[in-house]
Image 1 (cartoon, rainbow, N blue to C red):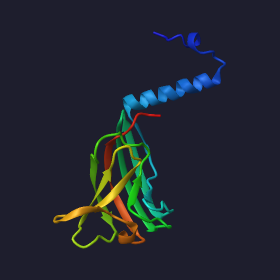
Image 2 (cartoon, rainbow, N blue to C red):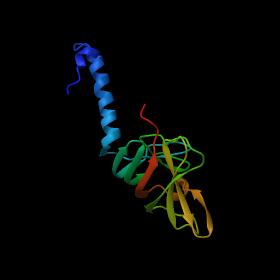
Image 3 (cartoon, rainbow, N blue to C red):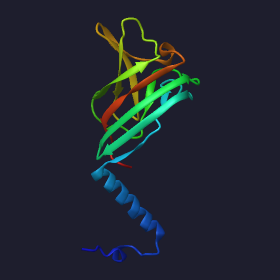
Image 4 (cartoon, one colour):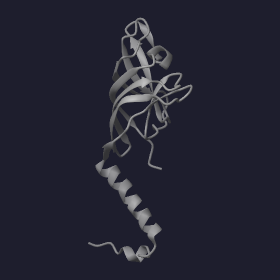
Length: 167
């Protein structure tokens, strides 16, 4: 069966075709998933800064509202970044109560606080950044700051979350 496209949109109306192409791309991505390379970045919660990266490799898969991000980031200078270390995201998380999206990550070349020995990444509601937390067996988790991590660091991991609808 062929859909009679010229019944709905004038063939010479280029903006109409752009809208149809964009709609199809979003629909195909929602059904089939869209996978692509992604250059991951970190920023500070106080001052975003401009870190100098030695490694910046990432991939992203979006299927419907489900978003998966794999990242490998290493920085050699924080470029004025201050506050909590945050992973910047392509899509905002959905609006929910609490901080439901938590993934474990691997950190190296970062200075942990005493009694903290592993990292997690926490993504809150309606947010386009995920905060890196340091954790330990007998301590309360706390955000990892650039001040504690030092001027060089590396994080590697995976984050899965429910994103907002396409805009």
